[in-house]
Image 1 (cartoon, helix red, strand yellow):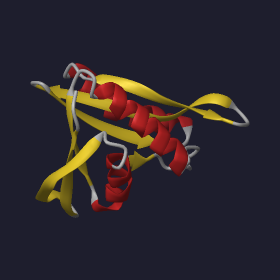
Image 2: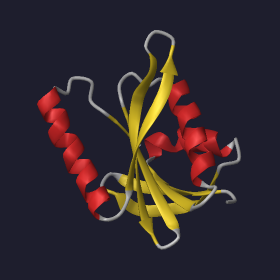
Image 3: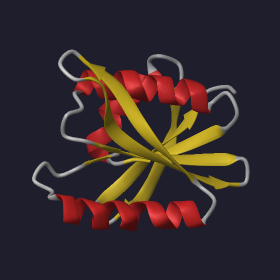
Length: 134
């Protein structure tokens, strides 16, 4: 789970999005626009999720846009995992800075922590989460 830099111009965004999405699409994965409702603008895109598949396992990753609030991220993430777990088991590798978010989702019964992966990221370990039921 990453955040899109707020000061990204259109040319840089186009290059960045192509760099992220092309490998996912070429490998047979999916790209999903994460939509949320706002009081002032109605429904708008608040992030992008990618899903890569290896066997029966889905590996999601989200990038949140600057307009997304913590509440948006929680509500959209919950709906995303509820829908995803209907047909797939998903594994999420979370950086330490995002563990609170995934623990909160776990409180709603969609994810559970299953362990730690040492030196997974350049700057440290990952916590591994798995969807509950499907």
